[in-house]
Image (cartoon, rainbow, N blue to C red; front, side, top):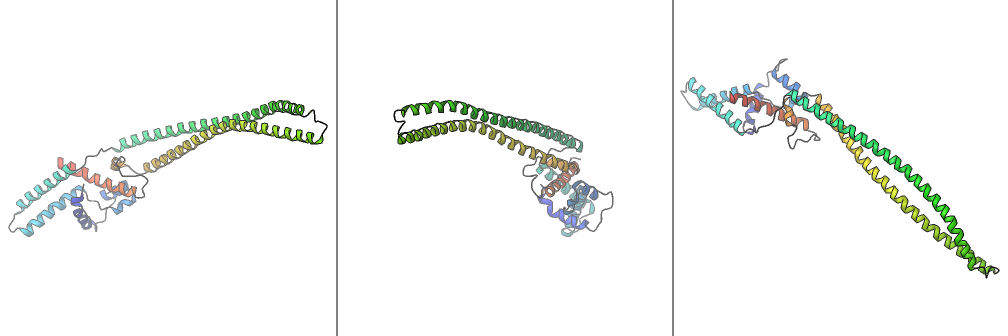
Length: 286
């Protein structure tokens, strides 16, 4: 919004550079608001800007026009100043400003909301962990029950199957070859039956295991959510250590990412621009 007057701002800042700010003056107040990195900014307040415009107009007219009296120069300077302020005001972008009290109130509401979300996420996480523990215990009990049931039913089935195989070889029981064949057939059949039982048990245990894995994935998501919430609370705590001032109006500006390395410098620059804009609008409206 200040591209057209930026060269004049830098020139004015260089003219005022030799003067050291005294304790309690406006420069020191801005530094307290914006922090140590404000030293990198060239700030021009409204009074200095208006005075510089008037002096520039006077000097330019005095060099170009001979015989112009002070009254005419003053009228031209006032007209130029009023037109410039009107143009700046017309081209300025309206932003929603917040007082420090309102900003702190909203920040506290945000903090309470985030804390409540964190507590809710912690409760959900604990509940999920309890469910996972319960499901693991249930899975172990189910495995033991399945194995026991398989063993009991398998013993009876194996005994019945062995009797049927023995009956098939009763006629040739006296022959060594037939006896050996009977043992081999019995072993093969029992092994096949046991393999099928193991498959059934494995399939049922797979269902329990899948349920536990689903819980574990939800726990991972909740844990990540808690980490992000803690990070946001930490950032809020750090921001509260700096006087928010007019910089608070930029918290919803698109493109100002809190994760960028130079976010503080950008915020400081936008705050100084906003402060100068407010002063210009007040002057233009008076």
